[in-house]
Amino acid sequence: MQSLESQLEAVLFYASEPFSVKELVLATGAREAEVKAALKRLQDAYAERGIVLVSDGSQYSFGTHPGNAALVEKMQKEEFSKELGRAGLETLAVILYRTPISRREIDQIRGVNSGFILRTLLIRGLIERTESQAGERSFTYKPSLKLFEHLGIRRREELPEFGAAWKAVDEFIKTEGEKDDNRDA
Image (cartoon, rainbow, N blue to C red; front, side, top):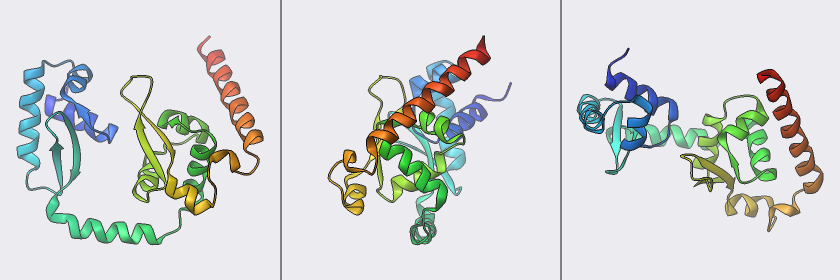
């Protein structure tokens, strides 16, 4: 078994979203005091690295070191100057026609991990992320008002063939769910 610090690094890196101490306790099976001590050691170890462990006092996540802000800003500007590409447009369409939607659902529909694309769409202000209504530690994504303005629509029902697309996506999800049920049987 890896050290607690290693486990925490893996969880925070994999999730790429903030985790509370309570959630880290559940993920690792360690005691709260042990998790807090390990997080402090990780913060100290990463203090002068390109990546730092950031916290708002209740949640922890990896971020870039403030000393590299100019480099990161330059890269963001370059990223914004590029077109979204097929994967970005596909993800955006899924969110537009199936909002609110979780990352897991987006990944299921697209058949690939959409984490990087979601990050790009969030940074560009084309989508918004909100906590899931289900109460679980997850998020849902929806189109931003900025995207509606860019598309020249007032609400998503004005999207081309909205009703037919909604029905097709529902049917696809239902079919995929049945396939998963048959595999489990």
